[in-house]
Every structure is written in structure tokens, then in C-alpha cells.
Length: 199
Image (tube, rainbow, N blue to C red; front, side):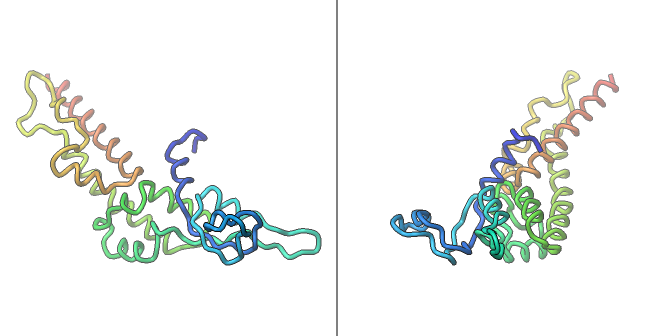
């Protein structure tokens, strides 16, 4: 992944629930208590990039037992309720309502947690929804009445904006939107090629 990948940057900015394991002086303002230390056991939502660093770092000194600064929990976007809903019907869950970078966040969490069930559900969800994404991508932008004057419906290349396509796109996360664009562009290029061959 590129250092300048905007999707990776936005994924790292997602908030993750953390529980502080130690008392941290002068950080009470994070818990709306600026004059006090941040107490052990305080639960906060921190950006993924920061919470990951705090979870990996530890307080081990000479002769001391290693202790992490924070303990991470799974974010609300991939909570147990969401996972159960995805198990029931992956197509019924608007992933963008959970997180605009749902799959990216999920795969990042798999790097931090050993969650076999989460990995299975994410894989099944992506495969199931990818079929729908490809189907919708083939439908949009087509012209029902064929081409006029050798053109293959340039006005139809709207990536599903308008009508039912807009509602469908609204529920897709960024990975699915990229897949949609590639499938749509591939279908359109294939139709254009077929038109040139027919001439």
C-alpha cells in the first residue's frame, strides 16, 4: 500500500475503542478532565493509528513486567451485531453506514486480532456482494435501443448515478465502489470494442 493512499490514511483515522491499562499523567483532557491524570480503566475511542501504537508499545523497564498502554476492542463497524447481520444476509447490510472503508478496517483488525470468524465473514461478504456489484455494473450505462450512428451510448456512462443505481451505490464501501467502477468501465469498453468490430 502506498504511503499516499488516501483510503489507507482515512482507514487509519477510524476510531477504535480502547481501555487504558495504566494511569497517564496530564492526559485527563482526553476524558474531559483536564486537571487530572488519565486513570487506568478509562475507555476512549482513539484513531486506529494511535491506538495500534499504544497497544504495541509497553512500559517494560529494568526488572518490570511488560504492560501495554491500552487494550484494543473491535470497532463498532465490525461489532458482533454487524457480523451476525452479515452472516444472515451480506446483501442486506449497507456497509457504508458502518464505515466508508469497511473492508480495509476489517483487514486491518485481522492484523491485530486473531478472529477466524471475522475473516470468514469478511471473505463471504465480499464474494457475495461482488457478484451483485458486477451485475449492477453491467446494467448501468447501457442503452436499451442499441447504438446510433456507431456510438455505443456515451450518455449512459454514469456509473449508476440516478434511478436505482444511486441507491445501490450509496450502500457500497470504497473497495466495492472501486470494483463497481472497474466492472462498469470493462463492460463499457467491451461494448465499444464490439461496436467497432461490427462496422
